[in-house]
Length: 92
View (cartoon, rainbow, N blue to C red):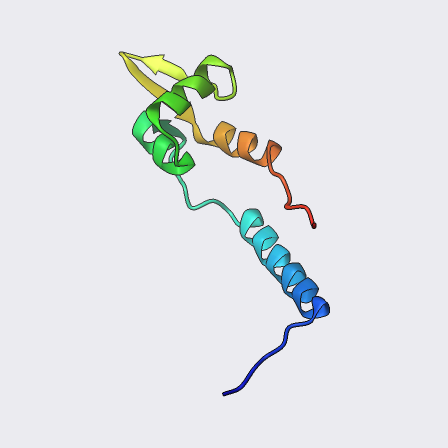
């Protein structure tokens, strides 16, 4: 049985590589092509419940348009909000 020992330097290198890959993914053009999303689509993108999405509307975090009883969200605005609230993990 073979045992691999990881050093602190190995973990730091892994962390740097992982962060580089994540940054690369964030800089790629989005897969989403629709300009306006309906409520169910936004809930899926953000992985939130209907009540959380309502709270985001009420507190002004997400802007929206309402037409004929249907609420539409601007996908670019959602991306902007996500990027603005991006946080990096801190080291302990």
